[in-house]
Every structure is written in C-alpha cells, then in structure tokens.
Length: 424
Image (tube, rainbow, N blue to C red; front, side):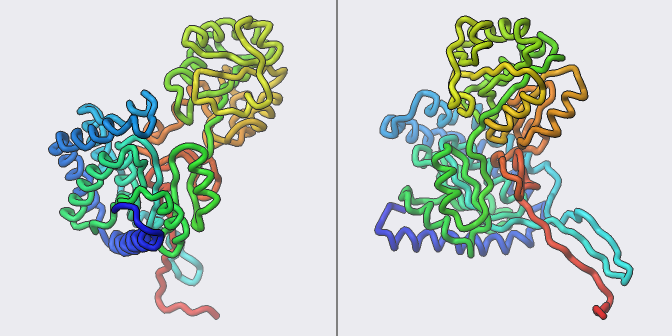
C-alpha cells in the first residue's frame, strides 16, 4: 500500500487489525499439529524459494545508501544462503517446542467438588515493531503463531522487500496448513502514522512489542493504549569479586564486552573489588585494549591503567553499543551492588567469584532480568536459555521478564468443572 491521506492510512490499519482479531479467534481452535505443519512447510518454502528471497533482499541492499545505512546495518540486512538456511532451521526448532496452548498450569479440587484448572491461553493479537534484520520477520511470526497469537508485523522500510517476500511465504503456508491466512500480516504502508494508528487500537490489539532503538521504544511506550513488552536499554555490568579467579575474570569480561558490541546483552561497565584491582585490572585492561576498547574509569582505575580516561557520571549510565567501557573500583560487595542497581537498566548483570555466599547475595539483591554467576552477560538470550527462540527481552516485571519465548506470549484463564454446584 502506498502512503495516501490520513484517512486512507487509518482505514487500512483498521482493516488489518480487524482481520488479525478474527484470525486470533480462529487460531484458538487450531491444533498443535497444524501449527507444526505450518512451521515445517514454511521452512521448506524458505529453502525452495531462496533465490526469490535473495533477489528481494538485493533490492533492499541496493537501496541501502538512500537510507544512509552503516556497513554494520547493511550486514544485518543481508540475506546470504547461510542466513536463509538458518532462518528455515529456526522455524523447525520452534516446531519442536512443546505445544503451550491448553496446558493445565495447575489444578485443584475444592471441598464442594469443583475442579479449578489454570489453563494457558494466547494473548490474542500482537503488534510487533522491529528494525533491520529480515530474519526477525520469520522468528517473530513463528513464536507468535506457535503460542496461538495472530501477529501484525511492522518492519523497517530498509528491509521492505525482504520482509514482504518472507511474510508472503509464511501466509501461503498458513493457508495450506488450515491456519487463517491473516494470522501473519505485514504492514504494507511505510507511512509513519500507521504505527500511531495501531497503537490506538486496544479493542483489536492485545499487546505491542517494539524491538529497536531506545527512541522507537519510548515512542511506543508513550503512545500505546495496550500493554507493551519492552526494554529501553542494555547497560549491563560485570562485577569482579574479591574471590574471583584471575583467568576466568579476564576471559568473561572480554567475551561480555567484545564478542559482539552492538547488542543489548553486551557488557558496558566493569565493577571490580578494590582487594583485587591491582592484580586483575592490568591484565583485564590490556586484554580490552588489544580488542580496541576505550576504557573510562574512576581515579583508582586511571592509576592502575594509564591508558584509561576519566569516567563521568553519564558514562556509568550509558549503553555504548560501541568499543567503550566504564570501570568502577569498589570497596565491598555491598558497594558493587549499590552501584549496579543505581546505574543499571535492569537487563543483565554478572558476578565473577569463587565465593558461593557472595554469588547468592549478588543474585538476590541485584534487580535485573537476569543475573549471571561466572558466565558472560552474552548468554541472556532465549536460544541460550533453552526457550527455542525469543521475540525480545523484557526488563519490566509485568507480565514477562527476561527473554520472551512462547510461554511469555501467553496468559491463562481459569476453567472450572462442576456437577451442578450452587453458591449458598
């Protein structure tokens, strides 16, 4: 759909939302076997139509200069044969996940004979907004439909042709498996007003999930009239305890910061106990400098690492997504916890220690969606946690927290079986 006047765009969005709501009601009666069939056929068609996908993707690559994409953004946009295969394989992995809908979460029999069941059900319609990577189109659709939800996909305009080709394959496979074709819809207009229209349709859309830059997520959170599953930023910390093993500390810090810079679970800040700072900061700093990382630290850090620059208050609260890390030397575990909770974005924090009591205290008092003990922050990911895949990471506490897989895309209702009981 080409952008038209405001009323045309609103009517288009309204039609998409209504069709998604109807599809969600139909999905409630679809079996797990049908959803598995859809996922496997979608994977087969992605492989079979890989040439067509590559051609659509090439149109997006050719237009990348018009959108002023960086080399890294173009790389994320590119669909290679290996990435198409990975996308297909991911759908097959989701197909193998246990069927969530209809699961009896708990059950009890009351003294009057009523059987009270707590049963897992879909959320309904999910409006998913995302940027750049075309494979997210397939991943998000797979997770939403597997968990019984219809999904409205709003991808970035820089991937419009790639996303459209993938969504068409998914929709055709849905119809062939007996699923409503409108269970997966890609927003066809690039008009920015469309997002605002969808965010004002709580009567049709049950939840919105934005996945992109902080500006996008804040706009969605401010405008949405339905619940939003989100995280704003990933200012993640690694704390080196006084009981840390030296080699482990160096290895984990380098991996957490350097394995991939531009992701939300990369470490942005290092906190280290003063008792081991003189011993461990120099080798950690040298390893980071070899990776091209700029270090900004407090006075103690600068004395121990001559190459380090001064850290400001703003540095400690910044998600860099770049080759920069802030460093803070603390006098105690309690000070480390206080510092992290003050500057954290509630995403992922890690402790390196051989002291089990310190690890437990850290895990108990740190207020983030994931706490890693002697492991890299990079593991806060749905696939790494065994969820199969994820549609995003939430730093909220209602209704989902951490990586969001199929269970986080469901709710529950109570189903009560009686035999004629009445309340006296």
